[in-house]
Amino acid sequence: MAKTRKAQLNVRVDEGTARAARERAVARGISVNRYIEELVRQDTGESGRAFVEAAADFMRQYEKVFAEEVGEGQGRR
Image (cartoon, rainbow, N blue to C red; front, side, top):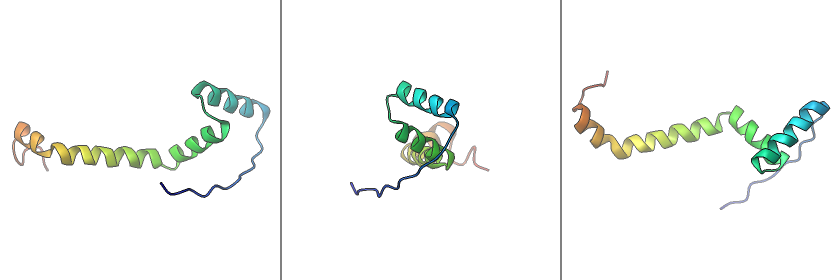
């Protein structure tokens, strides 16, 4: 697996936000850095793209099963 280059990012947030970030990270068993990184990825749609790709792969694998069940050409518009 290729190494990903890391960049340091310093942000200032109010104490309540910092406390919430720490609490959520601890609850998930991850670092605050990892928690924030996951939030940014979710916000930029990376998780959504992974889901769509997995769903498309699933449909490719089971296309024949669906065609047999629904009938060839039915359900397509």
